[in-house]
Amino acid sequence: METTAILNLLMHGNQLKRTPRTGWAQRGVADAENVAAHSFGVVYTALVLAQLIEEPVDLSRLLIMAALHDLPEGLTTDIPTPAWRFLPPGIKTEVERGAMNEIVTDAAFAAEWMEIWEELHRGETAVARLTHDADKLDMFLQAWVYEQQTGNRHLSEFWAKPRQFHFPEAQAIYEALRQRREG
Image (cartoon, rainbow, N blue to C red; front, side, top):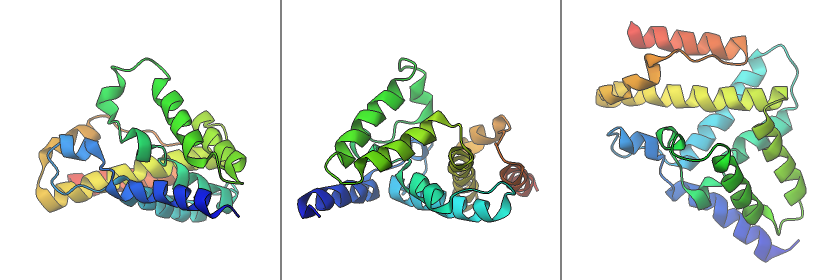
């Protein structure tokens, strides 16, 4: 084991604790979650969803993918969705791929982690689709919590256009959350 490489890798993960989720701040949420908190939400949501869906998934791969999904943001920061329209198509993924490569390059398991991260971005497997569902579901849960805690109605844009999820179980949870919000 190369201790220095592992320590550097751990420091990149630790950086997510200090990397704000900028979309919340742009919408006036004070003391918004950081990327590490969101990443935990995605891991936890993926774990729950995996218990609900009929399609079998490799739970280990799912949890690794969910944990890694935003790791590059420790270097790139969290670029909020509204800014993406000003970026060339595909550039966000390309930049994050470069950051991910830099973060994991010295680890003995770099190739495995890069393959899992690339699988997520291809979005072709059940594991990738479930991770995407968990990512979005965690975002909507957080938006609802912030609305409840702060009364911030600047978050209504999240609910303006209904979201379509890959798995019916994730869709049902999202619809129940929308109903709770409207009730």
